[in-house]
Image 1 (tube, rainbow, N blue to C red):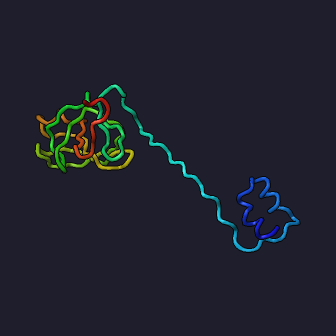
Image 2: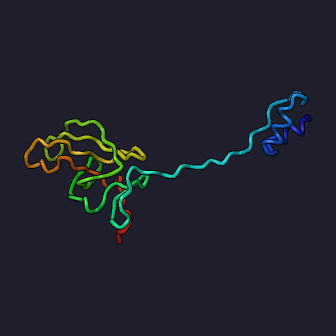
Image 3: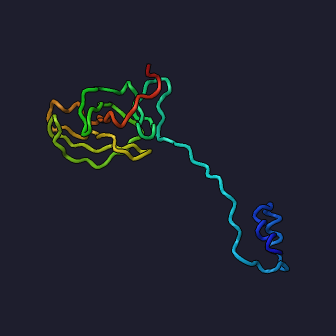
Length: 157
């Protein structure tokens, strides 16, 4: 096999290229292997743990557009997060929860766990695990998501 054949072997169909390169009577290869043909990288589409119904107004992660909550699960818009305004939700999807820790917030001592987007790992807010004051018990099991980490998605006019 001549040098030109070696250099163009990667352009031949595999059965032709391998047949001539693997022959026991072929001359030994001279020089480095030719460069491999450019590969096309197929990116994997984003998949979320849960998709919220298309007919409802919803909130999504501002960084990756993963669905987070339905507007129907919004309890209050008058909360303060660590970086600005925040909303209180009854339930959320596509979020992971960190370990609970006690924090003194504006409304007193609470056990909270930071929550993050499962898709892009951005910290979104926190989950109220336990409220130590009786007037704050309604927050237990609820979620705070800061406005700068979510967008309104689908059905907003």
